[in-house]
Length: 585
Image (cartoon, rainbow, N blue to C red; front, side):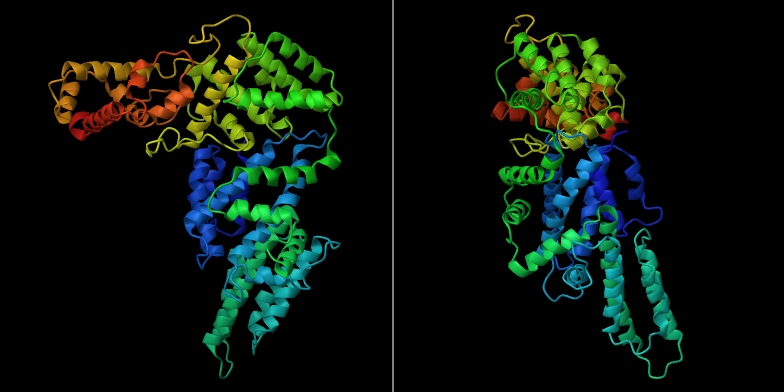
């Protein structure tokens, strides 16, 4: 099952800081590929990491979470850019990491570390990166480990330990710092405890336990912070690059080059600026991929970008003819570097099948595609969006919890920047349905598919207000029917203005079944109870209403008019009363 790569990176970060402990329930969530579970973990992870790297509160917890969110948007935007190369994805991703990680981490240290604060987590990382112990660009990775060994030994010698025999376990552990021999934070702490115990139990005359303990605390602090740096080296081999960028920052200022200036404004400005995001990711792409990319002719490249718009652009107007698709298909099939373009030609073939309403053929084709083997860019998300939508269209009754997770994670990892996030409605009400990442991805996939169908279908004329037969419709029917039934009953009792009395009457007359009251009204979404659907009504219309579909009862309660707000509030209060133990019991 495909996981979400950024979430995996966060687990590595959490592990690098030694935050997993035995029987930690958060460790187990890594095996659950549902991104909503990763979201819960991410909040815990970000807060725990903040407690370590920002003890002085330079950034609040909320600001730190926003910073991590912007890191994720950087990742999403970068991975959405198509790369036309014969290298495999891991090789391309490695090149991206080499370009992106060092300036991001250098800025993080520069912005968070307060000068001369020796107790700060980044202090010894700062010292090491600027020291003679950190190797030059020409040196190999092994030299980083040797440099850390030398730095720690030299640092210990400056602390003025009058008696060093009790440090033998620490020195022995430092000697074992080498490439391929990772060390756990818990073991480092145990070595410090052992040294402390040996000193206390020694027969040295005039020993100062308090002063010695303070020195050991300083050794532990230096060792743990540099061990985190070695974890970075273990996974990325980028410490030397980080050192080069960080030294320039400390010598010439934070804006030592243009990309640092843009990156700084994007990550740390209060206002989110999407134009800066694209400037950064396209810059990294241009620096990274040309040496390993093939050069496509203008026409096939233009059609590939058009394919992306067909799938993802829900605001694009206009439509395509059969002749348009004939030209695009022929061009992609005959393109130079046809082996590199082949996956895009398959997406073109899939769109052509959908345009001709050949859903069975489209379902077969999309299931034959190995999402894991698709090149870096928008293709994995494009195929996953269509596959998820076709699953909803053709096998809606077979969808159970977890069935869509692999497609959801693929979309999240490759969808690019999420620009229409609507978890907070225009009225400032949090939408329970859209605030779940999994639900939102499913709803957006349905909307993208339905918009795409209207753009690409050319076989016959359909009433502008009609429903295309191969679109996804009926998802809101159950919800609409229930609202209509309750609304008609309330109108019959129009003389009654007491919601408590109305709820009792609805219960007594069995207007709502237990399933309608507390069950799922939209089977493809989690937590789609009647109450949650009411709170999310505007989002449900925006994403799940098929163009031309009659959902008059839902429309009646939607929007910002005074009457609609009053009716929603009345319905919500009645539902809350119906869910009280006196009824449900």
